[in-house]
Figure 1 (cartoon, protein in one colour):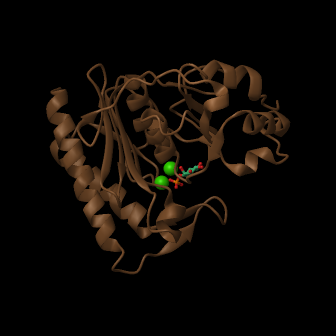
Figure 2 (tube, protein in one colour; figure 1 turned 135 degrees about the vertical axis):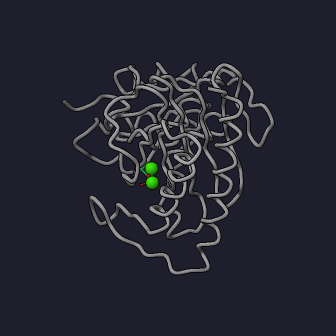
Figure 3 (tube, helix red, strand yellow; figure 1 turned 60 degrees about the vertical axis):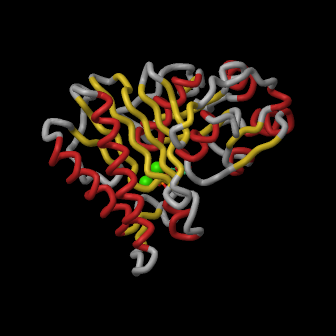
Length: 264
Ligand code: IPD
Ligand code: CA
Ligand code: CA
């Protein structure tokens, strides 16, 4: 497999998919709900996934695709080349705000991340990485993350986790929010990860993400020294849903040990 060539191909279809999505704002977007009334999906999510799958299969018939909208095959192992795709990450932002949504893709070979992409569709901003070769923001190299103290950190977290809930001890999260310099919540996991890898956030915490939310981002993160794990400090489980923390290496352990207490 020629990684450089695959990278060029992936970028080409991501930019093309982005153009199609932007054009869709001139048409009617059909909105439906999935697992709950706040879990949105549109015809554009499905059309974008299908567009990417058709392009990938046409030039790489042996590659398998794990996509959020289930239009690829059922992927039960990461053997061979697997593309993990979220055609629109931040569908609520897409529907409501017409901005702050990403196409994100990770390409894995036998379970190892090789190429990662997070594309801000409206800004046409691309964060990408080639494992072992580096990470880029619009073709400019991303720097390795510099150490940061927890008191000076700005972290991405959803406000609902500072309220009583049955997943984590919210009192600890309140302590975290009081300790850090600031918090943000952007409504797209991929966007928050893109901000961590480029030093605009120092950590991003989520109680439950799917492989397609983070598949591209963790590959980019690794190239700049960010640490990505679940709340047990282990690798994220790519074949199901899992807790997730990506952070600057100087505060990753500290957040896990001092501020995250899962309820069993
Ligand atoms: C969602 C977004 C959101 C995160 C959710 C994801 P979607 O993805 O990334 O920020 O909090 O857990 O499901 O549904 O917009 O692709
Ligand atoms: Ca998503
Ligand atoms: Ca999605």
